[in-house]
Amino acid sequence: MILSSRVPNLKNICGIAIDLSALPMPSYSAANQNFYDSYLLESSAKSAYFGKRSVSFREKSKPTRAGDIWTTELSIQFPGTDSKRAVRLDEFRKAKFVLVQLSNGQSFYMGRNDFFQNTPPVIEIQTDQQLCQVKFTVESIMQTGFLPEYNGDLLPHDVPVNLTNS
View (cartoon, rainbow, N blue to C red):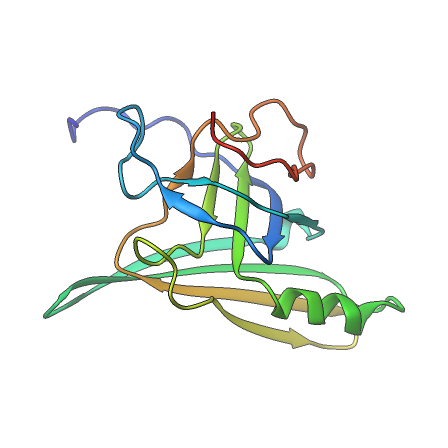
């Protein structure tokens, strides 16, 4: 990798999916970022609605004696005044993994915090009379990686159920 190479334009988050039972594995493909990128052996992702202007993703490193710790946060916000509010919030609390689709067709995967996940994300929910905010926080020994060749042809909001790496 050449650090002086130009980085492609910034992309926006256009899709979020919550997975309750995925089986992610580190990628070993030479075309990808080995160990950081993941591929999914199985998944049952459910697309989640969110306000496009109210999504945020943040990743921060902190040095420790054992090496860096990466804290990754994803926050989404949506109206919370419908009749299924409590059931919807309960489903978010069950999340083991979060898939994030970008406007360029790339997707990344939050939740694999080691070679195999050993701790689910911390999920915080805040509501008021109109809005709900769900925040997912993952601590990991590595940065968030991508899902190779995932969801390249789908329109925004459509995060697929079939998440296999070919």
